Image (cartoon, rainbow, N blue to C red; front, top):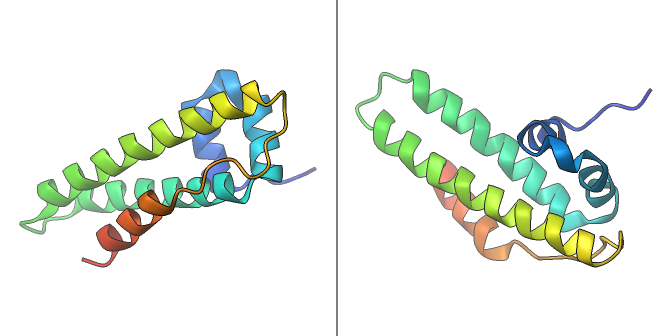
Length: 108
């Protein structure tokens, strides 16, 4: 029995109709693996700020929610590209702009 990466599991919950292509993307596309990791980090941050009593909590939660929306858009693009590529999912997208954004957000 194989274990699903926690980030991939979250994405499969978000896009249940795309489970097959998500699995292929995760196995064959390092950029998609990074998106899965970033999505999980973003979910963790959303949960943290949701329960925080810090005066900046709402502001930070809103920033992470915006980042989550951006990650979901990137996932939709990768899913679409994977479908158009006929299952060839390696090397799609680089996520460079988004990765730098998540690094900035997590280090505040």
